[in-house]
Image (cartoon, rainbow, N blue to C red; front, side, top):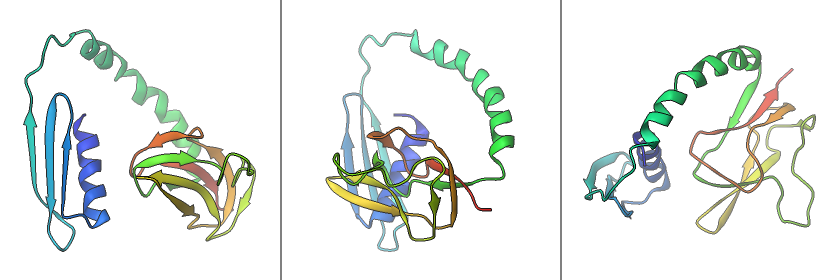
Length: 160
């Protein structure tokens, strides 16, 4: 788990209203406690001893990092005129309400403020995500039944 994932977990816990969350993985433990106001008060991270970790993964990730920002720059300029609908939570993204139902939206669909655009499942609860803007769906950025993180872009919408 990297620092970005930990920060997203802290934000999610603060917004959820939970007062304490403990997460224990093979190589670390995290305890997040929040105040009544919802702000993260204390975070403890205890690193567990590593056992024979392969050192190949780090150089590959480091080599790939400089390439990604250069490739994303032209796409960012192209997409700057669109509004992004982002995930309000961590969970699993679904494009339709059930397997036998049609998709909520497709590329080219016109949406209005308040229309349901997808469902995100979090802890066995299915949360309908509504559009906060009106416009036309230009691009769907996440595959159906994929995990999503807090604040991850889901759709690009042309508001014109």
